[in-house]
Length: 540
Image 1 (cartoon, rainbow, N blue to C red):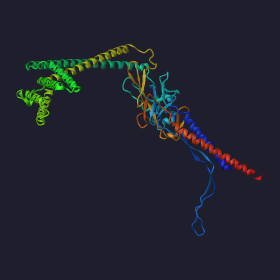
Image 2 (image 1 turned 90 degrees about the vertical axis):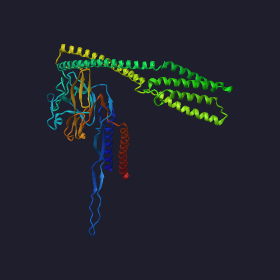
Image 3 (image 1 turned 30 degrees about the horizontal axis):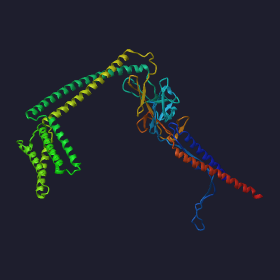
Image 4 (image 1 turned 90 degrees about the horizontal axis):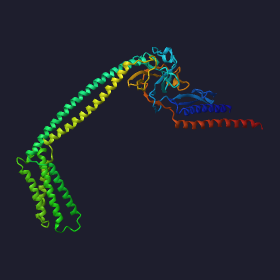
C-alpha cells in the first residue's frame, strides 16, 4: 500500500510541475516572441513481483508466463516549446521587426573587438552570442543598434556608405550607424547626383512641353481647316441652320405629346374625333420635320448622302411622301369597312418600314464624312490640349525639384560637420525583408546602414531559455549557421513585432485536466491512508 502512496505523491509532483508550465504560458500571453511550453508525462520505475518465462513445449512443460510489475508513479517526460511564428503586431517604430520564419536574431555583448569570424562551423556556438525572436531595437548614444536590454544586434556592416552597399559577410559585427564624416561624403555625393538628375529631368520636361505645344498647334490648325470645309458645305448645299430645325422638331414633339395626353385623358368621349385628329396631324407634322432634320444632317454626316437611294433625291423624298399619304389615307378611312381598312393599315405598315430604313440610313455618321472628320479633329485638339496641360504640370514639378536640389547641393558643398566622429542623425528607418536597414537623412537621402543576420538552428528543441527572451545554444542544438534573411530562415518584417505563441483556450483546457489529475492523485493518498488506518486497527 505504501507504493500507491508514493505513486500518488509522484502524481502530485508531476501535475504541479505541469501546472507550473501552464501558469508560465498564461503569464507570458502578452510577452513579445514568447514560445509556449508543453509538458508531457512518463511513468516512473517498476518493481517486478514475478519474472516472466518463455514457456516449454517439451513433455511435462508449461506455457509462457508474463512478468508482473508494479509502478511507482509518474515523472516529467519532456518539456517542449512551440517555435512556430507568432501573430503579427503592428508597430510605429521603424526599427521594430519580426521574423516570419524559423530563424533567430543574433544578439549579445561586444565580443572580440566587434568582429566574430564565421570561418568555423561552431563560430556562433562558441562565441557566446544569444539567440532571440524579439526584434525590439533602438539606437544607443554610441550609434549601435541594440535591443531593449542593451545587447548589441549582430549582422553584416555596410562598409561603403557613399556608394553601392558592400556587406562584409565573412564576419559578424554589431551594427553601427555611420558617423557625421561618413555622411558628409554621402550628402555631397547624393546632392551632386540629385542636382544632375534634376537638371536632366528639367530639360526633358521642357522639351516635352515644346513638343506638346507644337502638337496642340497642329491639331488646332487641322480642326480649323476641317471646320472651314464643313461650314462651306453648309453654304453650298443650302442646309440651313440645323439648330433651327432641331428647335422646330422639338417644338412639334412637345405639341404632339401634349395633344396625345389630352386625347388619352379625355372623359367626354371625344365627340367628332376632334382631339384624335389634332394628335394624328401633329404626329405627321413631327415625322415630316424630323425627316427633314435627318436629311439636312446627312449632307455632312454621310460620305454619300444618298447612298442606295441615289443618284437623285427623288427616291428619298418619295419615302416621306408615300408615308404621309398612307398615314392620311388611314386616318380618313372607315374602320367599319373591315376589308378596305385592312388594306390601308397594310399600306401604312409597309410605308413605315421604308421610312424606318431611310431614317436608319440618314442617322449614321461616317468617320470620313465632313462631320466625322471635324469631330475627329476636335477630339484630337482636346487630347493634345490635355497632354500639353500634363506636360506643363510636369515642367512645374521638375522645376521645383531642380530648385530644391540646387539649394541642397549649395548647402552641402559649403558646410562641414563640427563633430566628424559623432553619430549621424536620420529622420526615420526602414528594415527590409532581407534584413537591410535603410536610414533616411533630413534631405531625404537613403543610406544603407547594414544588414541584420539570422541564425539557423538545426534542432530548436536543444535551445535553452535564458533570462528575458533569450536562448542559449545547448549541447543538442547543433551548430548554428548564419545567413541573410529572405531564405529558408524566413523574411524580416519591419514595423511589426511577434506576438506570444500561446493558445489561451488550450491552456485553460489543460489547466482543467491538470487540476483534476492533481485532485485524483491526492485522493490516492487519502484512500491509502484510510487503508493503513484499517490495517492498524486490526489488533483491536
